[in-house]
Length: 278
Ligand code: C2E
Ligand code: CA
Ligand code: CA
Ligand code: CA
Image (tube, rainbow, N blue to C red; front, side, top):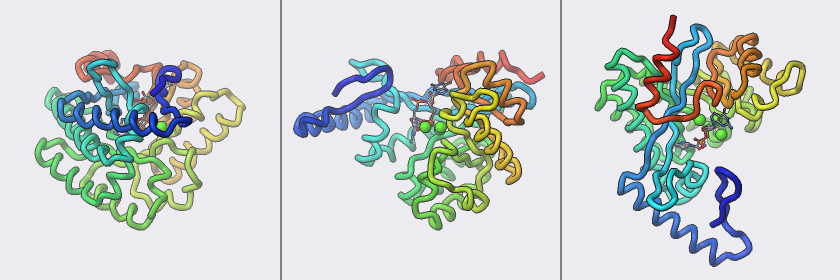
């Protein structure tokens, strides 16, 4: 395997044997890593623009590899999806995040924790019962849990996905469409998904400048979502100019390096207190 830039990890495609061997090694290491408790969950705050408080946190998995240090999900999530390990990873992250949200809730800090769900987990058919079980075990109020699903996975086998989303929504949890605007056109389906939040993909936020194409798209997504009574989260917000634009357009929440990178739960409380609602 070979590192390309910061977060990229690519396999040599010109040598099939090396590729297969390295993938097998990574799979073995990941399997062991899961057993040995090497996975960790980081949390990235979401700022509520109505009162400038931290209303939510996205749970993002990291792998504390014994030799390589902290490894980002870009390097192992797709392999985990192909090998089925995503089921174990997804359940681990869900449990961690729900337990963490409950710990904050007990301290009087109500943070809506969002967990990324992979299409594999939706297809497996037991997602609703796992979520119900985890909520019952921890006694977390369901409204403090959110699941993020990407647009493209919602459109695959749409009728059965809609049925699953209705089951999940009936538990009282929140649902979000992640990376909105990057998939196929799901506009006609949007009103049929029982979702609460739309997350504008960071590719639109990056080049957000007054008058540009991305600004027009972002404005349109916010207007569309609000017409459907959905809340809007913008992700990848790195500059004050981006925040000012989003605030002006009535975006509900923002997430990005401007507020904080994903951080460990212990550090999260400090960010929370620094942004205490006034
Ligand atoms: P995502 O769900 O779109 O998560 C947002 C990614 O953007 C995160 O990368 C986050 O660290 C990064 N990010 C946040 N703010 C900024 C910013 O201001 N600028 C820039 N350049 N990046 C920002 P991360 O943690 O590396 O995660 C990458 C992807 O891995 C996630 O994309 C998600 O698709 C997947 N992933 C992460 N954790 C899990 C998990 O527990 N389960 C599943 N199925 N997928 C996960
Ligand atoms: Ca996400
Ligand atoms: Ca996203
Ligand atoms: Ca993404």
